[in-house]
Amino acid sequence: MTESTEGQARRLYFEDLEIGRRFQTGSVVVERDAIKRFAADFDPQPFHLDERAAEGTFFGGLVASGWHTAAITMRLLVTSGLPIAGGVIGAGGEMVWPKPVYPDDELTVGVEVVASKRSASRPDRGLVTVRSETRNQNGEIVQVMTARLVVPARDGAGAGTG
Amino acid sequence: MTESTEGQARRLYFEDLEIGRRFQTGSVVVERDAIKRFAADFDPQPFHLDERAAEGTFFGGLVASGWHTAAITMRLLVTSGLPIAGGVIGAGGEMVWPKPVYPDDELTVGVEVVASKRSASRPDRGLVTVRSETRNQNGEIVQVMTARLVVPARDGAGAGTG
Image (cartoon, rainbow over all chains, first blue to last red):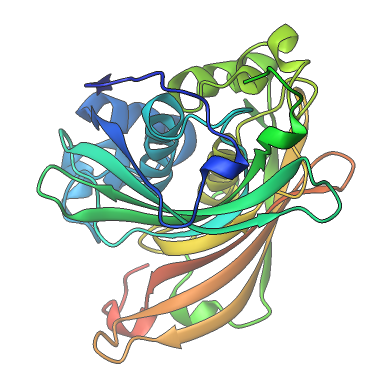
């Protein structure tokens, strides 16, 4: 996996994540060997492990595990997309994989804040819902994920921090 | 990661996955080094990478990435839980992580079929929804996932196969 950009921007707090705000990550090329390594560890099925074995399957060829796509999406968000103070901490979410990821696909992620709610019991933090679209080099969507993130509030973080 | 059971049961088709049917996987111990390796590759944040750095964070100590928990859950389903003909092929799903996974936690997954629908356009397959609960050695739920799987039908698979 190689990353074309890996920015380190200003850290963001709950107050910064207004609904409609968008972010764009760098990109990652998903190498053939990385697909097989991930599969060997976590999703050892023929269509993720071996080109020849994959031919007779649902996919008709080698494709990345959807969990690999999800993990790469997370890497892009953490390293170049969502510089959230306190980190990118997910409470859960939902996802679809409309198309497979093939060897040497180059993935990038666009994110949009779609909901935001300060915690009533813990006003020093909020729950921010983001919708991410992971696309390949042809602009085709390979994963859509809606995730709920726990985000610290600036006004709860103490003056001078962040 | 070590697995205590890794069964190779009879392959299951759409017709076998009646609503309410349950499966139980083997178990996996999530080793400290595996947590850090996964994080270095896919979720490089202090609370997944380093004990000392994790102390001052939301989690207060080293925990596994939620995506690592999801990937381990997939491994357990593929290798010992859901012997589906054609493989475990997810179209999408949703998940929550109610509790973190800590170093040396031992995880196991229980799965239940919660919905089932034969494809109208492709009657040789169906969409089966399963709900999986990933639990640690204390019986605490660390992940709940509801996933939609594409499953081949026996009567569309040709006589004598499977």
